[in-house]
Length: 130
Image (cartoon, rainbow, N blue to C red; front, side, top):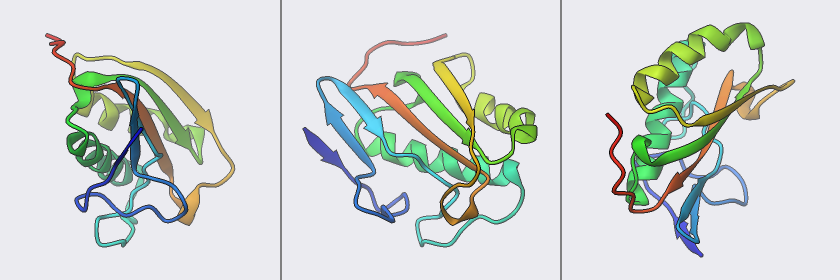
């Protein structure tokens, strides 16, 4: 097991790692709209989703992976009415690559975030998606 950490994404706010690499896979912890300096992106759900995706990008980058290496994501929403707004931002970052995904409504998220996303990605993938 290899622990992944980057200063480009917010530090873990609990007893967990930003990501773990094991058996050819990267498992990220859920990312909320915290910025690297620990402050929260507090605008709307679209702005929060952009920050979440930036955090995931930096964690994946620290592990040597990219969005095209992602095979599964889970999205946690504090309000399922935000699904369309989150989906639009999410699609912007993944483009033509469409990993498997689950979306779950939750009562609350850490720091009252509106959205949290985690993912599983391949390590050192040479796969190219058009």
